[in-house]
Amino acid sequence: MNVNEPYPLTLEPIPAEQFQDRSGRPWAAGEVPAENLGTFWLATDISRVAAGPQAGRGLGYLRHLWGADLAGLNFGDDPGLPLPVELKLKNTGETAQTLALSEYSLWYVLEKDPDFQALEVGPGLGSGAEFRPEFEVGRCLWLPQGTPLFLAAGLVLAQIGPPSRPLPAQPAEDPQAPHWLVPAGEGPEEAEFFQDQHLSVRLITTSQRGGLTAPEALTFILPLAGQGRILTRGPAPATRLSPGRAVLLPASLGRYAVESAGKITYMLIESR
Image (cartoon, rainbow, N blue to C red; front, side, top):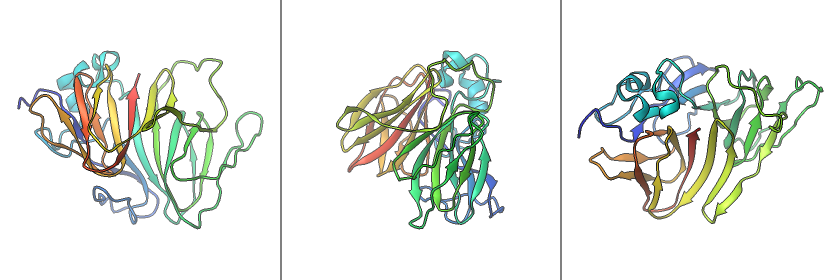
């Protein structure tokens, strides 16, 4: 195939902040990191491609190469801007953590230790309010900018949100307090967790081939369970879906389908 033609890109997980182990060792695809505790970049501007003709190249380089074909019209003309959405994984292991959020983000619970203790969100929301959620696997939490977040040990979370950069003011009707997101069912195998002017997040479960149309903006697939692959019309290299690896769908990809031999569950994260 033409190496200058956009196609689905499997990305390497990159260790970032390390809570305990500072060796920088990568973790194997399909595994939740048990020893390398901390933050892992699954899809950010410094991410690298894991397989195919572009293997080893960074998204920053590919944005210069493909422009709007990769990131969409809103961001493709200026590769100096950060990607419109970032995807990270946080694993606290046996160490409680305190974080301060620079931007709003969504936190999806991937795993929870049986001995997990409830964590706090707040105060610091202006009214001194505190939010004490009971984290359960499969739930998604919305957290506003500036929220102090106290993460207990025994959590593995996917953090989804815009990159740390100035954003337009939030509409007055937007929620300003942390809260759990309730999936809005769109069908027996699809639910929408979140949508605003910056991104949308859908949870999809399928046990067959599902035809979709790539949007006019950059989109990530985050597999949560099961094994599958992405099919496209052109001669793109095989793109496997497995937990622990994020896949980028370029804005100009056109029609594609997710195929699986058994049941597969994944998040579809779309910039807007």
